Length: 67
Image (tube, rainbow, N blue to C red; front, side, top):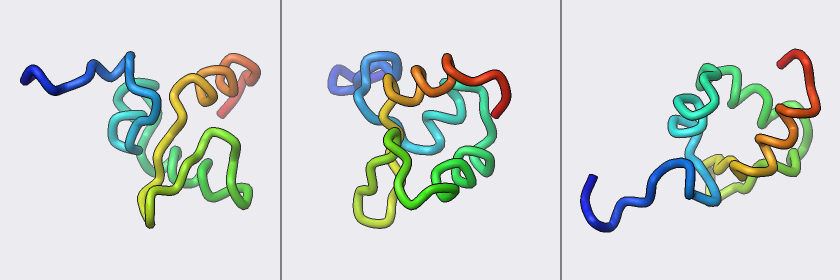
């Protein structure tokens, strides 16, 4: 990790790949969840790239029993 890298647990948004590693959910599953509704509150689109709002997604997971 270089001096400019931010630890994943401190990032505000995560890429799908980072979120998959952090939450231990498959990338395909995360992409499907992001596409289920027009724009879930935990998703931010950066151009055509999906960014996951880490804390909002954590709250969503805490409130559910099954993904």
